[in-house]
Amino acid sequence: MRAVIPYKKAGAKSRLSPVLSLGEREEFVGIMLDQVIASLEEAGIEKIDILSTSGYGLEAMEKARVLIDENGLNEALNLYLEQAGEPVLIAMADLPLLSPKHIKEIISTEKDVCIVPGKGGGTNALFIRNPSLYQVKYYGSSFLTHCSIATKACQSLEIYDSFLAGTDIDEPEDLVELLIHGNGPSKAYIDGKFRLEVSKGRVKLIPL
Image (tube, rainbow, N blue to C red; front, side, top):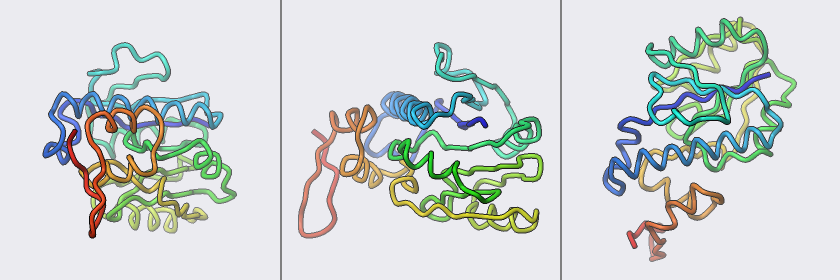
């Protein structure tokens, strides 16, 4: 099997702009990408691809094969699946709480498709045993869409329910979860810029 990580560095994570500058956001997404790759490797996945619309930020990448496709996410991934010829795990690049244990459990499913739902109806990871029989459709409520695609394609389906694997880093409040539950370089990067403040309400992110 192989894993593919869709990745964009240029102008990344605009919803984090209230707390991180453009340069910081671009640096941070590179750190998260490296951590996701490390988790995949530790889980025993040797064939790892990065799918990007440009090579920006990937010039020195040695840990994975870089594939450039200027098409949109869905078109690029569906072409990738069509050509894969083996089971594929699609993992987003902003999942620093996704552990090797999670990955091993996801890819050990006995079902044809295993979906890891993200916040707000998104899809954080997607294991596809028979990629030639499946097409992805991200954006919007992609989790429900991907469940429907599996059903219509007569592919058996498992939903992997995990708070940590389901936490993608998009909003400032997601950084709170990273500081509370995370470890490794992604947490260390944010730990060097913020602290947590505990009040009567929710835990807040406070710049250092």
